[in-house]
Image (cartoon, rainbow, N blue to C red; front, side, top):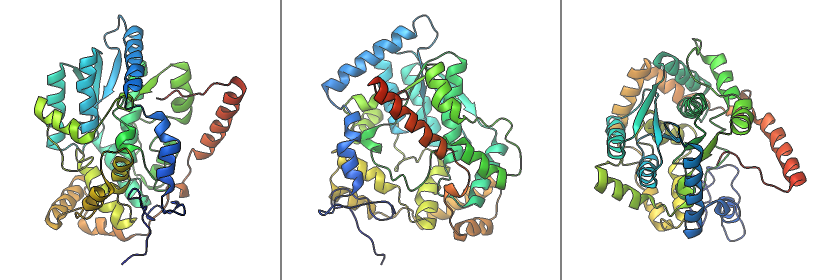
Length: 379
């Protein structure tokens, strides 16, 4: 039985090596949520008032254009629920889906139902599979925790590049504080860190990334937000958002179907989160997700603990998923096992853009002190 300490308020524990507890046993994640994160969360009438202003601004800035915003759609509950609300608000989004090769059939069906119900135009960007496969194998060879970076990076970089090429300033994201307000930074680095991605691929990849879309530090933090005036908006932070109620509404109104677990829309992410991370690193990504629901008032701690008692995988289902994973990546089960038992590595063992980010944050704080204004451009 492992020796660990668990927060008495949420369910985060010492699988996060940087977790700290106060004398009452409450963790730093809970305190940060109360003191910092909650200040950016407006699940009330004040938030709805702000949201109406944001929607009006998007309509005004997009007047005369074919689309006034871009909505990234994965088929998951957050982005699907947002799409339905966006339709009600009268916005005119171009829905963009990035297919990185791992969509489940249920994800594809959910996307079709959302787009049909909302009568939105859909643009699907299909990632070159051979380049995607090479990146996945490079990350497995690197042995880092954030195996989902190849998918996440190309998703966001494709959205940003597409938006600016088509002169659309606003990207709507289903990301939200209510279900994602807690996440341990120690587990892995930024999915947007193209320096880290290229370093890992440069060491372990076998083919050039000719079409795989990346975004540079300069583009992400300076060029797009300040020159192109691009904004990522997270509307679910400005309204009451309860995941269970959202799922029930989607099922009732458009026939959307739940995946049974968070991020089940991607077969890769399912295996990564429910087998690779807990087995190789001891990270159970249900913990920060459930902790977020606890501190946002959507679930009791006892209910979260009960969910954590449910096994992550049925053994037969796991065997099927591993076999599919190996077949798709064209590796043998023996190679997969070698990746699983090889020593784990941290992403900072490879070059990152974190030094540049720290310099930029210092400059930001200096400008904010000088001008007396807070700089916040991505949300």
